[in-house]
Image (cartoon, rainbow, N blue to C red; front, side, top):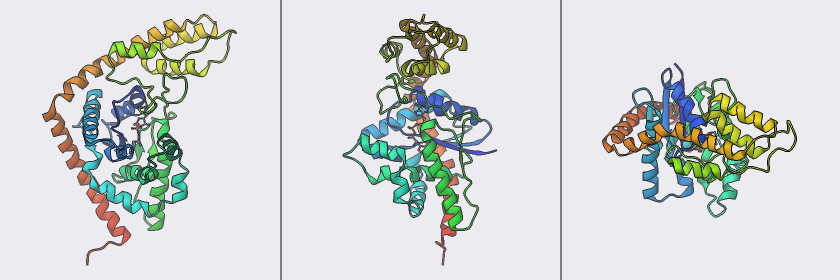
Length: 329
Ligand code: TYM
């Protein structure tokens, strides 16, 4: 049985990118592994949410985790800030994380560009906090989407550096994981890039059918192929990519063939895509509403998760402290 760790920032509702990039794999792993899935609320502080927004978002993401099928009887589902050991391990790892390598990460550079008035130290050390999340439970596998690849590379580096520095084989070197396949990137509806919360191009699991139809019908397209067998332009390839995860394979094949033959009607493609997303979302959306209202259940899940996660984290911190040389007199 391997240990699996992954998390999601509570900065808004879960979208199709979160689902097909990460959650789908979480779900497949919780039966046969020692799984820890958490809500990364420390990480979300880099954008300075109000206390009300922070709490509301954590609750919402928790309800969404449970609605998609994460099972608190099988996996440890917890809130990152319930484990202060994560903050302590981050502090310890920070001593061996270098300014140059942190400044070079693409996620730091992107964020510094997106929020130039708020380039805080938390953004810089974001990958260190993420490494602490992962290695605190001695994870072997981390199911994530493609956008987290570089952060995972940093985690591997920090874990190996700790082992080397203290001449121990203490932390396993964790792998980003997608069942032997390449990591997934679900694109947005705006013609380029990935689907994301801050990009404003997402389809959320909680979106009502009318909202989904509106978003999909507004998706960026082009003037259409003019020659047989032309390569598929990026905005259309993006719609096909979303179709490949929510629609039947024959539906995707049908539209791809129409593209190749220059017969494609983007209106039809979008209508079909919207209906397939609606079908996919429907049962999840209903469940989210049901669970979000059940405060007692949410409270129970959080306290169960906290207890199990704490047992694992406190053992690690005790051992790490000894390795480093904080020893009792
Ligand atoms: P976050 O909250 O941005 O995204 C959560 C998960 O969803 C995946 N994801 C996507 N996958 C494919 N296509 C997309 N368009 C897409 N958008 C998001 C992400 O890859 C991620 O797996 N730093 C992390 C949260 C985190 C974490 C961790 C993850 C904190 N500590 C430890 C794993 C292990 C983040 O911001 O993900």
